Image 1 (cartoon, rainbow, N blue to C red):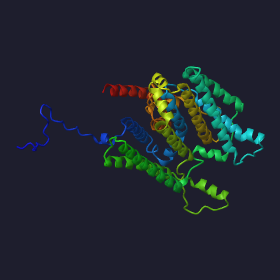
Image 2 (cartoon, rainbow, N blue to C red; image 1 turned 180 degrees about the vertical axis):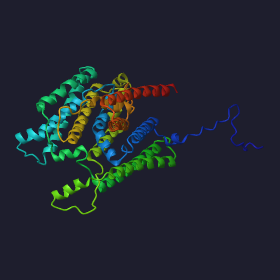
Image 3 (tube, helix red, strand yellow; image 1 turned 90 degrees about the vertical axis):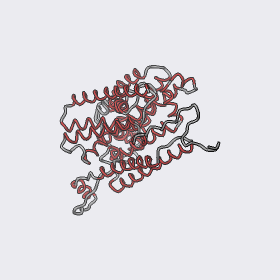
Image 4 (spheres, one colour; image 1 turned 30 degrees about the horizontal axis):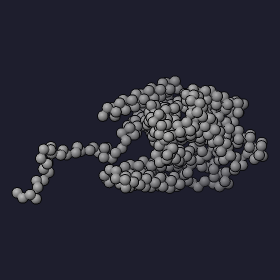
Length: 441
């Protein structure tokens, strides 16, 4: 044998032959987050169980439509709670702050703007000026609480526990304890059933969202290749894209299957001086409030993953001392995080009061617990540094599904709260066990 001859797969002298890499499972090749997969599985299990218990009423288009609009308010706040908990803080005041922001917006529409600026009820500017006032209120209170936590070093638990008592009663004094309404019709469109895209525009929005999601996945793959990172097989990428696009379009199809009652259509035609054609039907489609939640989710995800602020938030939550030594102004960061939370609470106040068509004194009651539970169930670690926006939204959906399903079955409210509390504790326990196993590998 000549010096140039080689033996295939022969190992150099003194070394063991290279071992063949273990075959990766289908799920591993798709590179899907196992926690996300578990939450999706839990959500599907909840839906299937309640659908069986309600004789198929839980998974009807009507109930899914209602479930989606009921989830929005808590889900929007849960995205902000992710940042709060990631930075090792807590906010117990979100429900009370929602009541104050709602009270301000209701009074702006019905009393303050008409009395001070002379704008008549129904004026086109009323709802938008009211929303701006609500956002300013939420941002100011959030920033103030963040300043108390960040610069005066008062524990967030104490500051926001005080806020829970203070802002709930500030909202009561703003309205003198009265229910304020009905709110402006344009404002009510953000509440759900009073504002929807309709079937045609829902399909257009769904197709655009699916195309955007596929393009984002392609862009992420291209960036990984450009930076020399390993990527999943192209077939796995195609499967993930198909799953995402299918989920989006399937959701749109379900919402479009919920038709507007004929009596409502007839009333709308009559209001326009027209007669409804025989056999005419129309669908609600995607509610504006759901579109608002999607917009919030996209913005918060971009902040978390693509901006310096997001990197600072997760770095501070992972190790506050190291973050401060590296030059991050953790005090100002705390103010920013609580300000974001305040703005999101004000947006949720728009959705919650618009869905009720008025402001009531008990609006947002116990929302702080639902929001924290949604973030924790969604995988946000109470020890800080870990959390996802999509996880919090999915956690809010699971929570609302549990409550809605139990209500449909006829479970008493006290027992509903017992079940939700048990699920929260179990979620934290599962999270602790999961992280211990990951840390032990």
